Amino acid sequence: MKRIGVLTSGGDAPGMNAAIRSVTRAAIYNNLDVIGFRRGYEGLLEGDGIPLTVSSVGGIIHRGGTILRTARCDRFTTPEGVREGFQRLKAYDIDALVVIGGDGSFRGAYELHKLGFPVVGIPGTIDNDMAGTDCTIGFDTACNTALQCIQKLRDTASSHERLFIVEVMGRAAGFLALEAAVAAGAECVLVPEQPFDIEQLCKKLHYAKERGKTHSLIIVAEGVMPASELAHKLKDTASYDARIIVLGHIQRGGSPSSFDAVLASRLGGGAIEALLRGEYGTMVGRTSGKIVTNPIQVAWEEKKGLDADMMTLVDILGI
Ligand code: F6P
Image (cartoon, rainbow, N blue to C red):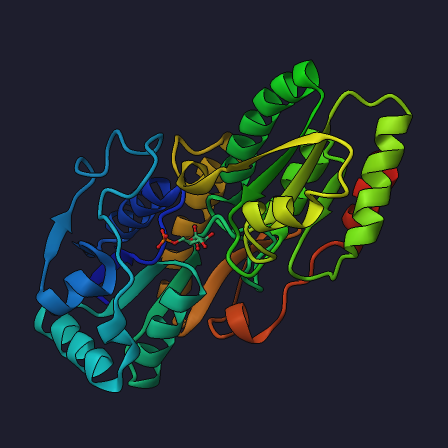
């Protein structure tokens, strides 16, 4: 193996730059050249590759976003697109590809692997909805960003004796919502993984108000319903004056937390080690503190469950 490619794909996540830096420097340390493709598979198909060097990945470990930029590439979801990508990689004399992204990006990598091209995936998404790793790159930072926002909302909610319904990202998963709800001490959390009863929710809010609570916070994952819809459902029954807020893409920005910068650095190095060991068609992850590899399709074939105890805890603590 002489030359590898690296790209970031799908939604960006804080820590992707730390992963690019780690992949590049670990590869160069092992005498491999590195080509970075801009805008994910889109850039691969267009031949938009640039050499990455020790110095070109300097000063990026602390930066949010991705210096390689990213895209969601429909063309790469077709067999023709994947074959074209394969040819492009061959034309660049690339021996293996490291893909940093979510499960959609991993599916593209898996298709390349099925054509016989060596790939390794590094899980990067704020959603944390991938099996094969306890945490994906960006999740911790996004939780902290959401927490900071919710803490600010709590101040004004309390002054005005209001209910705030906070919609957080997560696509079809509730990891971000649950983590933020526990950290922020929210009264309720609604996640797609668990059905909820609107009557129960209203009773809980009434009870809280009767006990003298000055405000309430509901965290709703975007995969459940929009905050506006929930506010509408609660309109006639909630005992508080309600306001909604959609945190949106702010959750994807900012410098990575210490946890994410370390995770990204470890997974980047782990990806190069996996390639050197010949573990192709795999993803790297962190399980119980250790860097591990799994077949890449584990990311979406296995279901990563929400922690049921954490869900119960929100109920217990949010009385
Ligand atoms: O997968 C990351 C994510 O931020 C999801 O939480 C969200 O549903 C989606 O991407 C938003 O995508 P876009 O940036 O294309 O609007």
